[in-house]
Amino acid sequence: MTPSRFREITSRYPSLRLVVAGDFCLDRYFEIDPARPETSIETGRPVHNVTRVRCQAGAAGTITNNLVALGVGEIRCVGVAGDDGEGWELRRALGKLPGVRLEQFLTAGSRQTFTYSKPLVMHPGQPPEELNRLDQKNWTVTPADLAARVGQAVVESLVGADAAMLLEQVDLPDTGAISRTWFAANSPVRAALEAQRVFADSRIGLRGWPAVMFKMNAAELGHLTGAPAGSIPEVQAAAAQLAATNGRRVFITLAERGIVSAAPGETPIHVPALPVRGPIDVVGAGDAVTANLMSALAAGATPTEALQLAMSAAHTVVHQLGTTGAATIADLARGLGLDPAA
Image (cartoon, rainbow, N blue to C red; front, side, top):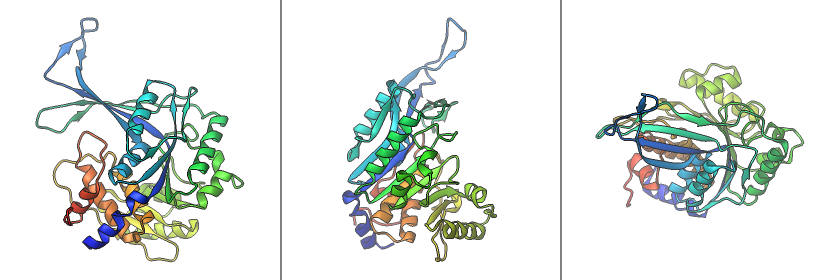
């Protein structure tokens, strides 16, 4: 990618109107000082003394954070938080971000806020040591009236948008912000999604989803298509098959091997990952890829250019240790070997 083409694409980001919908969670980091050891008088067990707490939006919020880092002009967030302290923190984390709109971000007393609590032991001069995570999730089906309200918010948010992302982060269907009722053949939500430039990613799998642009890893691709998806040629063949069936472009992440994309009637594209430089933390890399794909394509990048930008973003984020990171435009330029000031 030439410097002029890079500037041409990224200069359009402030004018973009993007939607991020689905499962937002609170990422809460507890920084533990190992130099302050203590034993509980009551239990006799070791005490972890927390000297700092960091809160930021995670899951769909990580995509949002990456869009903010890119300077996207307007980001419409559609999701649900509980009427609890974690929900207050999540709203505060999102609300302080420039360009973020929360008019369609709902609060529901019937749900607890999806939260990842991450204890980190902060060893001087070393990467943080992450202890066992504490998760707060909803294990019951989202009430039908709430699912309908979120679906309507998705439809409204798509009006005038340049692109959208629908992210499912939960482990059980219909327990998060996304409802399978939206995917019925006569659903207005399905019709609205299929009429726009929409990306979709689901931890559970995308079988039965509307005909939008699917993003997944190679294992998920193999499970969905039933085709071999081990080698890069196999991934390209399975991706081409899925794109032809779905009628939309698909994106397959391959970790250290890069990314593949295929569209109906086109030769699949493979862009390798950039080489790592030292310790890495892969948390958030996939969401950085998502944010950069949707921004670049909405700004008029070719598919190959979008994949190159996404790989540069992933390269930046995996080197941000002890946090769910984000990549700026200057980071992208450095990853591509371009002068950020050019």
